[in-house]
Length: 474
Image 1 (spheres, rainbow, N blue to C red):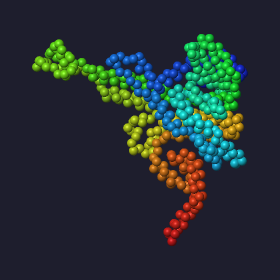
Image 2: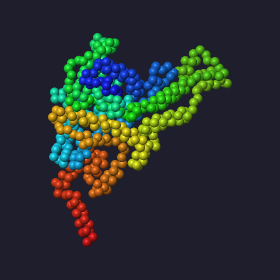
Image 3: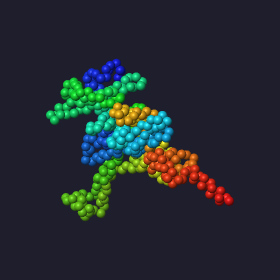
Image 4: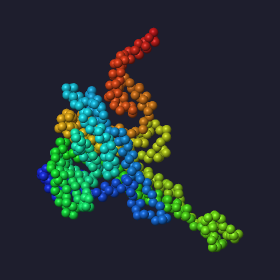
C-alpha cells in the first residue's frame, strides 16, 4: 500500500507520533479486503464454491485468474533478469561472474562482484518472481531491503505483501519517500493478539508494539538502529497506472464462465438421472429391485412401453457461449490462448510475433515499471556496500536492467541471420542474438582469445579468402 500525506503532518521523521502509526494501519485494514479478494481468486477460492452444493448440484471452477497471471509472469520473468553496463569496453554484468566497470576512460575500475554476489547468494531471481506474481494478482507490491543476520551481514531483499506494508510519500508531484511501515497482527501463547510494527526512515529502523488490539497504544521496543542504505529501504512496484491486477477487470467474466460450466455439468448429471416411465402396465412388488439388479423385467403386456423422461438442451449453443467468454477474457487481459488451435501450427516467426503483439504490449509496460524498482534496489545495495567499504559507488545510468522475453523463435532462421551478418555487425551484437549465449561480452572475448592463440584474425581470414579467390581466377 502506498499512502500520501502532507509533509507538515510529520515534521520530524525520526520522532513520529505513535498515533500516526495507528492511523496508517487502520487505513491499510480498510483496503485489505480488496487484496484478499484478489488473492482468493488467484488461489481458486471462488465464491461459487461456497456454501457446499446440494446433492444434485455440481459446482466447478476454471482458474483463469491464475492462468492470466502465470502466463504473463513466465513471459517476461521466466528467464532471470540480467544487468548490463552501457560503457564502452565494459563487460556484461551477470550474477556469478567477477566483473568490473571502467569509468573515466579506464582510470578508475569499480569491482561489482560484491553486489552481484549478494544477488547470487539469495537467489534474487526468486524474489523477482514473487514480486512479479504479487503485481499480477494485487496490482502493487513492496520490497524490503535489509541486512542479513549472518556473522558478516549482507544486504538482502524480501517481498512484502501490500496488506502488511505501507510506504508513506509526500503529497507533492514527485512523491518523495518519507518513511515506511511493515506491520502484522500477532498472537501470544496466551492467545492475546497485538500489533507488531517496524518503522523505516532514511537512516534508522525502529520496532513498535501495541499491548492489544482493543487498546492500541504503540510503544517502541529496543533501541533505534541504523540501516546504512542511505534512503528508505522500501521499494514500491506498481503493475499499471491504476494499480490493478492482471485479471481484476475480468472477474465478472470468470464468474460467468464458472457458473456456465457448473450449470452445464449439473444438467449432465440430471440427464443421467432421468426418470423411467412405464406406459400400459403397473410394476408388481419386487419388480423395482429386480429391474435395478438384473436389468430385465418379465411379464409385461404386449402393448406396454417404457421410456426415459430426459431434459433436453442445446449443447452446441452452450459451447458457443463458453468460447465467447474465453475469447473476451483473453482479449481484455491482452494474453494469448495457448490452447487455441489457430495459434499453433507451422507459423513463421513473424506470424508468431503478430499473434503475440498484445502480449508484448502488456509485458513492455510491466517491464518499464519493474525496471524502475530494480534500479532502485541496485542503488540501495550499492550505498550499503559503499558504506561498508566493500565497493565504490556506481551511477544508475551506468547499469542497464535487461529482461529476456520468452518469445518463440525459429532457431535455424536466427543462426542463418547471424551467419550472414558476420563482418557487417560486431561479434558481441551477433552473439547476443543467439538464445544459448548467456554472456555475449564474455563469448566475444573468448572468440578474440581463441583467434590470438591460433594466430588467425578476421583480417587474416579475409586476406586468405581474397588470395584463394585470386588464385582461382588465375
